[in-house]
Length: 239
Image (cartoon, rainbow, N blue to C red):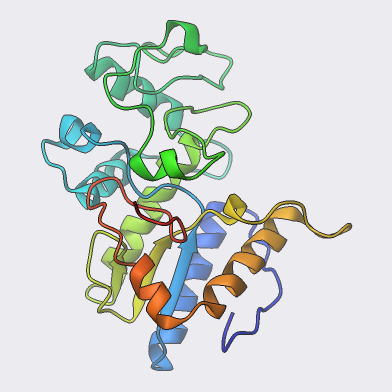
């Protein structure tokens, strides 16, 4: 979207293609001297305490780097369930992650929630305000976003490294760079699309249009959300 006009949907067949496309987009916008806001539909952080428990610090950007160093993402397979099991074993072997979507068993990763034990809060503060949002601990099954978070954070981490000083992650860093990474949730205010239109594409387009139409002062207020560890969904009113 540019100047209040939404462009057409761009289909990316896998994460590798999408990441390369994002790099090219950022390079083009920086070369043109334009600012760029990139919205991603997955949590940028985990409930309070998880980052410290895993990395020894509350810094969510170090947690991004932790996942980047360990996640292996090939075209036909990735190791997200194994990483979830590895993390769970550090905390006793029954949580915080659950739902193994693979045929093979993974030590420490429960298939069902009835044997699940989470040493951390089930939800972030923003998710208590965003009706219908899902917990980031569920790795598989209907409504799961755990895999999206685990696979998405390494991409964001690489984008920050590839464009040093040019990319800021909200709300963890001041938005004084040309490129901003923002957490969005297109389902927050948009339901079913008109018949014959792909739901995800329509929701993203409507989310971008809605944010573009908001007064600058209102956006500044929303971007002032104070959630330095867990992250925040742009558009959810802080309380």
